[in-house]
Amino acid sequence: MDVLLASPRGFCAGVDMAIECLNETIRCVGPKIFVYHEIVHNRIVVDHFKDQGVTFVDSVEEVPHGSTLVFSAHGVSPVVRDAARARRLRVIDATCPLVAKVHLEVIRYAREGYTILLIGHNGHDEIVGTMGESPDSVILVESPADVDQLPYDVSHKLAYLTQTTLSLDEANSVIEKLRQRYPNIESPAKEDICYATTNRQEAISTILKSADLLIVIGSQNSSNSRRLLEKGLAQGVPGHLVDGVGDLQPQWFENVKRVVMTAGASAPESAVTECIQYLKQHFNASVLDAILREENVQFPLPRELQMLRSRTPAPAANSSR
Image (tube, rainbow, N blue to C red; front, top):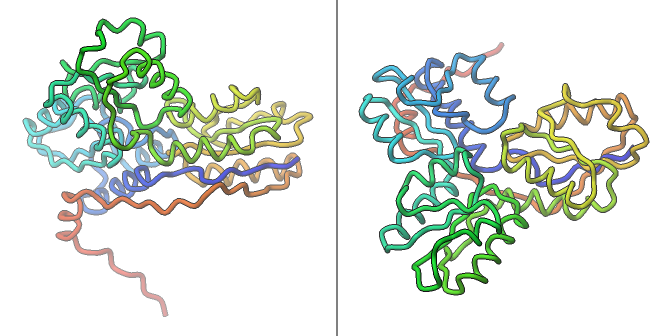
């Protein structure tokens, strides 16, 4: 069996920043901190922090007054920020800068009097936070069929934005329909779909045609991971979305000669390594790297954490003789 290991894969710059953010907050104030929603959508990562004593909450009201609260990479609405201030919480904002960009676009378009058509998936944490920036101005559009149901005519002042983790094909199908119906619709100068989402989708697209099976490492609630799986299924390649090696089933690999493996933007590389080792041990797999491009994007830690870190003594260096 051959395994084509797609690259880029795994952690993107936003996930790297969010995880480092939580690690540094633990170092500075201890593990008795709270995170609003999952820091990233990955069970392995979340369980790791739970084991350290971090508490994940779905409501600011669950956080004791005066505690430390970290906002997840997916961003939050102004209502959540106001609730945190009302409880006098120390807030560390780990929102991905690419998500924050979409929030700022909502604010700008709303101020200019646009109705904003937000392309995305209902209920996703990122969508909830983004729509919360201007609830009266934002309409969720999930599919081309939704475009037909919109009550606006061509004279209406419209703009569209997208969730950062959408499939390119999925987003483009809606955008094309919007442009057909509303030729004058506005859009941001630079697309909203995350560079990492695009890179991971393109990386597997170039090698899927020779594959018998696609394995995507990522959690079920990870939007970008599910889009990778859908990419394979759309090209007729059977596939599975797994958290890690414990989810692999031997029968999946019977009579399979070539596997394409990738990982969503919130999946740790350790999970990839364990899955590769499983295939080597049980199926004598040979692993080939399929590198589309290199990623060198980095995001700085939020300013409030940088300030907190500057006031926290560095850990003592280990000494040996």
